[in-house]
Image 1 (tube, rainbow, N blue to C red):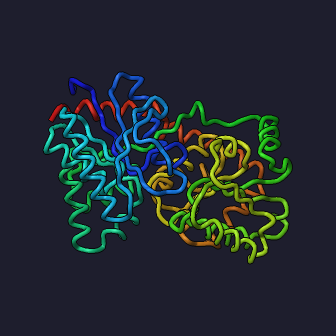
Image 2: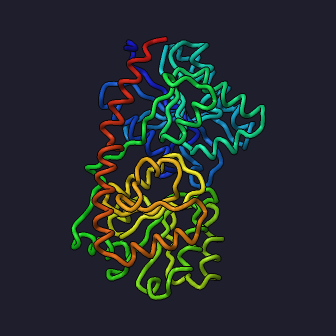
Image 3: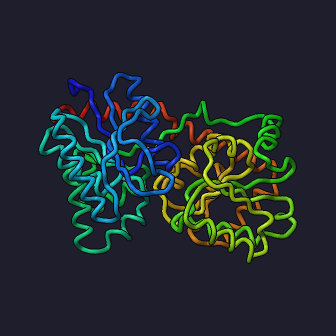
Length: 388
């Protein structure tokens, strides 16, 4: 075991509410600190509106966070992050585990630090296989991506689809670890009907309406436009008795609002923007929908299912590991609006089916995604890597 039990979490963003990947890094870091590990986060300071004015150094949820100057976009920001991060780590010369949450700049920082300063480099692949395959179609980009994976001591994948893709690139099986994102199934759990009614009142949601819920970023890869289209094709009586609630920020919000209005369903689609209390929305809803065009392992999907929400999800990424069609949820072909609408209608029409699928979905999350198991496997991996 490394004498210092020290880990640097390297990530492009780290601030409460920024996204599922950051929440996962936050939860793991906090619990590792409780277990005696020395954990620090090394991230970037950049120009996103909702992150302006964040401190260079601060404690977030007991975790020391250090933000490097890396403004601008594309390669400039990436180079600033790698160069600044390497200088920052060199001044603290000590063997560490460098855990990069994502490929690209943070992965190169982990690898260079590992070979210059000693320690070990871990790269976590957070996106779906399709996203990596599409992004690395070019010869140079593909070779750089493969080089990162080969130079790392361990590659973490969050679903079997990505695991299979990585192995086709020639990465050895022993270097690849399947480690799904963990969910605290004690914190994320169902509530009674009376508690659900009280939650809806607090959130200003109708008490007697079937609510379908999406939680996540509003950008093209998440496929929320497909969901709005599917909602518009539902039978009118189902829409009258239903409400589509879309929780999350993103550049696509205005376009999605216009799409709903033009499609004649603006009065049955509610956009809430960024919310800090997403667990209340899970517990207040009846159905969860994940219409992504590409996905690694959606934290929102696992959290919603842990709250016993029946899920309808694109048949890709981590949803394939978590959902058994017709038992613990519904799957539909990515971008197939007609299938998505059909699966939504089935659940909106059947209280018994929603209840049964929701319970089986929660059981699946407990078996596959429970946070304590994820944390234990990660610690075992860290210890097995040694000092390097």
